[in-house]
Length: 407
Image (cartoon, rainbow, N blue to C red; front, side):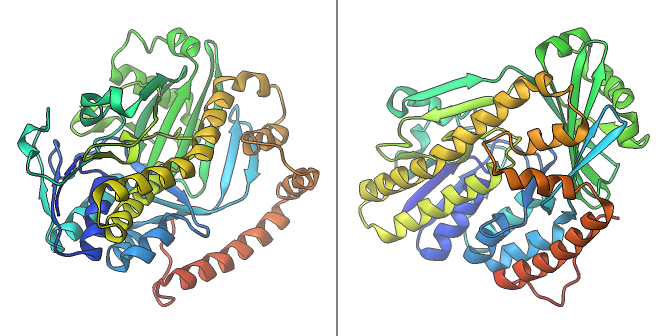
């Protein structure tokens, strides 16, 4: 089958890998408009648990998974800081990874399998691919390919209320850190996690009122970054923020929610952010994109008739995404109304933060209170270390390879 993937992000590249591993006879081309190594954003973060991103990668291509795991940096827990004075602690552990590193690993692996990966090529229409059996639109939330057939896909795009900016820092965070600071213009908060050796990813978010009040709407990127460094000085321990990505300064954005009534039309199929988006506070975008890729590759392998394969993929993945997108909307709405919770002390606020996507059993609050006690938190971390070892062995990681930790 002659397949063209428009978009060389994680979805397009991993689909090419998964499809080639199932049928080496596929003729697959991945077309990316940017040069190698160029990417929006700094890093991705995922929890380490059953059916996490690492599990998916190891199950479907252990060779690239080992490289991803070797480049990943672990975070040990989660903490919530309020006004730079109080800290609340939450459970879970996971890993961060540079997005550029992930793309480099997947591009090299796809090339090894015989995929033609082309960079610096802009696709404005599909006329050049008239001979393709299948065109995969994996070109992101603002997909040009999807826009060509928007009425057929039933596309609905809305934007969130809050403003956010994606930055890096040379401050290495050992925990996934959420910091909320009050300014004369209102509240502003930061999400930070390690994403590569010596660097962390920082996402800063605030309401439009705070954004305007702090003058971010009228200043340039350098002014914004300098002001943010002062606001989060204690969290950053004096380290700076890095704005440059892809050779351009980071820009303030509003989250784009993408929904499609169907994910395929004739021989064009949507995948990843072109098909759906989930708010960055869920931290699930990369895993969902790669899960799309695996499902589509498996559908093509299982069904000889293209229309049947695309219909099966469409039905399964839209059903799987429905609860995720519901959780995404709930999480985004919580942060758009976060002011109503910020008069709580940090323990109650961090509990409200951790349960923002649904009600919890009463005993969970007691567990949360216990986790604020240093001795019990140390026991929990030792338990997490054992669980991390178990999950690594279960998915096939070598037990002899030492775990890379943030310093």
